[in-house]
Length: 262
Image (tube, rainbow, N blue to C red):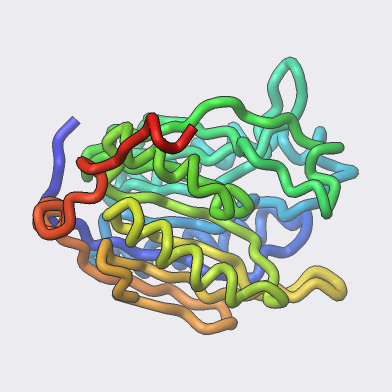
């Protein structure tokens, strides 16, 4: 696919209502459209944005995912967008938390969450993915991560070594650990010399409050756009030529010594 050296990128941050698919889809489409009208080309949605974590109803809710994807494909084609977000995916062997990349009307990549968050029993309801995925899109090469994956630097490094220029992180990250979210987004950007976009949800499920704090971070660790805790859209223009400049100034990816790390 082609590559745009400059990509206007945006994030949709909203309160995902548990099991209310029509409501969540309507909110997402409205906010995506508002960003598209501002010239945004790449849009991230939160983790499990159509359903939330209604674990006991995953089987039923996952059956709506093909229809949700059709809606996104129509919108992405109409607005010439690349849209990324995760949805419950029903497969023969179980349910996966899958990030889909819809590029101008076509699903060009799927990433199944590798690291399941056992403290909330994700491993009891979801199957774990096994592959790091870099999507070759019309805007550039985008590596995919979902929430808890952010705590595993090995995955992000693998994406960078596979050629990712942008890392898209979609999440439902709690407010209790928001300081970790803020730090890790910056760390993954700086150590891998990539742009990192973190789309988190806002709002709450019963007693669990979500952090918001969606971010667009440069390879230098500069926060280009940020959201607070409430529902919001944010955007910034990212210049992919900065990657080459950064890596020339500090060639740490070239100077890795893998045999010393074993």
